[in-house]
Amino acid sequence: MLKKLLGVAPKLESDGSYSPSKLALKLGTVNKTDFESISYEKYGGNRSKILVIFTEQKNMKMKNGKLFSTGNHPVEALVPMLHLKNAGFDFGIATPTGKPVVFEMWAFPEEDEKVKAIYDENISSFEKPINLADFIDSSFKDPESYAAVFVPGGHGSMLGIPEDENVGKILNWAHLNDLFTISLCHGPGSFLTTTLNDQKFLYEGYSMAVFPDSVDKQTPMVGYLPGHMPFGVSERLKDLGANIVNTKSDKTVCLDRKLITGASPLASNELGKLAANTLLKELRV
Image 1: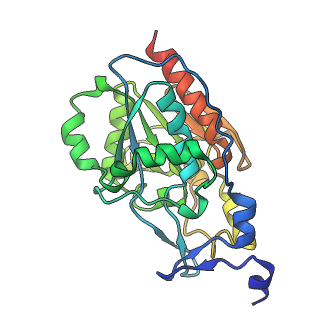
Image 2: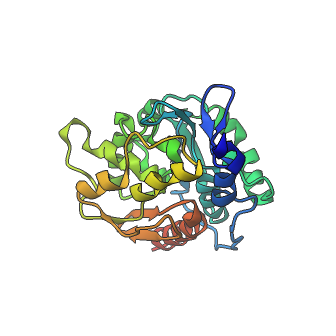
């Protein structure tokens, strides 16, 4: 009751899950993003497609048994997509089995017209995305059409994706065909798929920005999460040989070879700019 009065009690949803408290929403979400509308010299070549891998799962079970109402973070997905669209790229929207994309709609920036516009523009693809198995069957033979694979963050990106063999196949396909891989926040949990079936970690020795497990351990105090995480991402990646370049959930972004990463939702705009400029520079060489 005291937590509720102080605004730090997570909100109980109709399906029994919990979304962040009033205080957590005030501290951790925005009504309008810091997206910068940049006039890029648009890419007009053949490698104009970007595969975006979203989660199709909503509820994450915490260590205490409570369910966190999650999904992909809309800012982390849509702000980088805005930059990439403005740079001349288009998207293939995918989920592991073709079920609809799930967003953390409690984090949607309702006063950001640019973000709302790209969401509305892709709504049919979010509702009926590509099945990853179908993508592998149809597009693996045509890597020359693709520039990158993008895995947005949000805690939901830790549901189903890190153990999905098809995600691992796609990341290896991107690596072998010299495509870029883009991710931020909890999205780099997808990199764990490259260790499935006793494979060597694809990104050993790479520098990357990832949401810190240490911050996730603190967020239950303000009611962002309804309990402690079932597992972390940054320490697992570090143990596999990744060099994590950030210690805070900040605007840090990182480019290492063909890997582009960001630390948190705060890095969404910087990640979009880095990805757009890097792809344009690389593809025009």
